[in-house]
Length: 335
Length: 96
Image 1 (cartoon, each protein chain N blue to C red):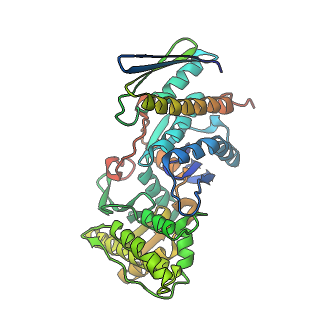
Image 2: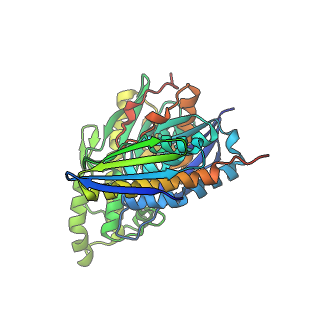
């Protein structure tokens, strides 16, 4: 049996999870929630993580019913993400690895999402749509790499949604995306927005500028409601994502789609992707907020795969990196 | 925890040295290896050097600007405090 503890804190969530041979033993998490209209900044986010990380670590061990001696390997997020929060989490991972005399393994955050999605859903070789506040990529596996078939050329889809939420002061609790999703259900009118698919890539910054510009005018003149805007924004950006995912499937001859990342728990996105899959006779795999949204178990799971293949990260090489592309990692654990 | 701080300025170069005592060589070594891997961010011309003696961690900064020295030292102290808290909380494995 191999037990791996995973530390994640690349954005506003801090999570520590323990995985034993495909079984999630514990996965506690805390979220740094900012007031409506405000985003999370690196310094304040790191401060939040520093304040709670040792409590979360204690919870992870207690819930799993394990002692440090039972752990075989300490995995942590090496990148990509915000520098200050990444350093905070890496510091604790390095310190406990040394205190407990365990090897360390640095994990690519995106690979963590993919491996967690595969573990939970049992998808074998899916085309992956990875959508979150910091990343938007369509990925397929080929010859030891998760290859990026399409991606955003500017901001992530989740960043577009989060910043729209700030414009019209939607609450960030539990997350701006969740609140947009609930409001969108009450939308009655579709407002046309720019639709920006460029080949296999997508762009969201123009859509955001457009809606930022027109939102207050349309709301104050009563031309539409905030709910209509939420609905229209979701329909537009999710259609774009379904389009590039479908094209990647056609390229690869794939019959499986896996949605991962924080935006992936949006049920409307899952529904739209499901319709596309049904038309193609393909299968959709998705997870709920426990595993879609950043968490420690996903880092533990990817770390478990790496550790089993004999990969470890020396302390001197354990620096964090804000930029770390999905296709930089050699996937040694798949055929 | 006591520490000795020395600061000086010469030729527009700011220098700061901090000595942090630890109970034993083991803790010094753990702190050094936890705090060393990440390089100083940015290009502010601030250089931070870490070294270890038998029971103390020495940190030395050389900087062109006082402001970037202050930022670097402030964030280092946050990091050091977190490493020490982690040692306190998880350093002694509970005996069965």
